[in-house]
Length: 161
Image (cartoon, rainbow, N blue to C red; front, side):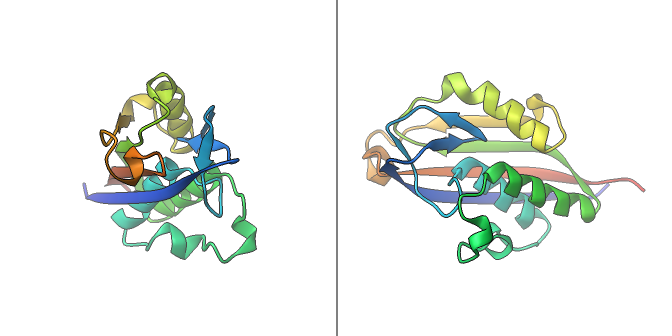
């Protein structure tokens, strides 16, 4: 069996007047991530990890922010399209391990819903999706609540033929 590992990272500025989407769900907050799409940093990091594992480029290459077709797009659609590319290359997901860096809001009570949502898109079970969160102890742009960061690692396995 052949395995491939991918790593992804995404950053977005936080601003007032935007909805806060994370892990495919809407979370109540006074700020939201600024971006061409819904700016879901967690899903974007997972997309990049999936694409990177198979040397397929990055999310910006596949869904450029200069293309009006992706203006305001739901990042769940982008994740689904990335996972379709994984399947076309003959691979399946083993697991996702991710970390979200943000000062606020606290997301612990939303993690199970995020895991279920992501698992549904990736045709797997929630126990294969890990989502951790940490603050930066009020240091940097994350600590000042000016931005949010997410990282993701994926393990893919070649489908036996």
